[in-house]
Image (cartoon, rainbow, N blue to C red; front, side):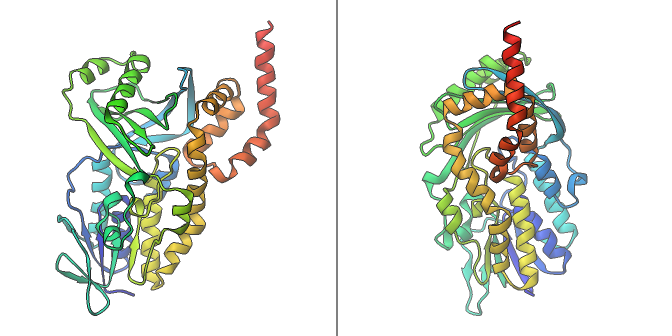
Amino acid sequence: MPGKVAVIGGGPSGAACSFFLARAGIDVFLFERNPHREKPCGGGLSFRALTSLPGGRAFPVDGADIFRLRLISPDGHAVDLLLNDPIRVVSRKDLDAALRRLATSAGAISIEETVRKPMPSKNGGWRVNGRQVDIVVGAGGINDPLARFLGLPIPSRRRGQALGVYIPGRFPRQIICRFFRRCRGYAWWFPRPDNASLGIALFEKEFRADRARLLLQLFIQENLRHLPDVKQKFDRNQFKPYAWAEPILSPAMLKTRPLNGPNWILAGDAAGLVDTVTGEGIPYALQSGRFAASAILSGRLSEYSNRLKTRIIPELITAARMSPGFYQTPLLRGLFFLLVHSKTMRGITIDMTAGHQAYRHIKRCILRGAPDIIRDLRRYRTSLTH
């Protein structure tokens, strides 16, 4: 078992890994260059993400529990879903800070420094900002310095981009997501206790900020008109927009990307662990942090890659295969037709939103529910004749 571990990045994967290591008695240096920043994202924690937190759904972080989800098709047709398990919308600053507090309470040493280049030392360990450690965990996001040193950066062509703002105020507790024609991505509205995250994510090879802003304005004008002052606040540009990137790895890259070596591990976004259909990464970051700590404590770092390749990677590979076709307008139109007219299809979608239904099993699930879906559509057709 190693004596000292450096963890680069104090987000969900890094903080979770630090907590489990420190709780087991390992000396942990947790590096976070900007612990006070508000990471730009929707901040939605699905049931899968909530249950992946240390302590599960009881983990202490403030947020708004949202049961109502509105999905809007490229043609403007809306479907309202009532979720069985709420999505908790939180501030990422608060979530990451709570996870780091948990790690430091277990004994991890939190260090507010930028790690530029971890260096192997002669004795087989590493030097990280002047500190000698046995193992390094790269959990510093898409620009993780360990991944760069190892020659494993996320290529620019494999980075999704997002643009958005935070709108202050109290708003109805309903998440709204809008899809667009000929666009691989979606716009979102995520209400929090005292503000809302408004943004758009595009999972395309070339990101154009002007196009993203136009689509966001369309979303506001057509789908958020019922919310007070949102358009006026956005048009006045009184809030500084945020932007960030996330990995959108291909199936081949997910299969072959190295995730650990004899004395290093990549976790979370640094490992490319993001669902390329939805952009969700928090549950995979949390799980990878836990798996990394378990492998380090066992003294067999190869167990980390093995667990990811059996528990997480197959699901992400399926998502990567689905993602380009999913956002094709004809397919989205068909899916929304089923959502509007089939209670069975709405139930399947609600399960997928929570993470109860895996992409790998979705075809089987739809085939199993086909008789009920057909029955729902027959009822709809009958209603048209009366």
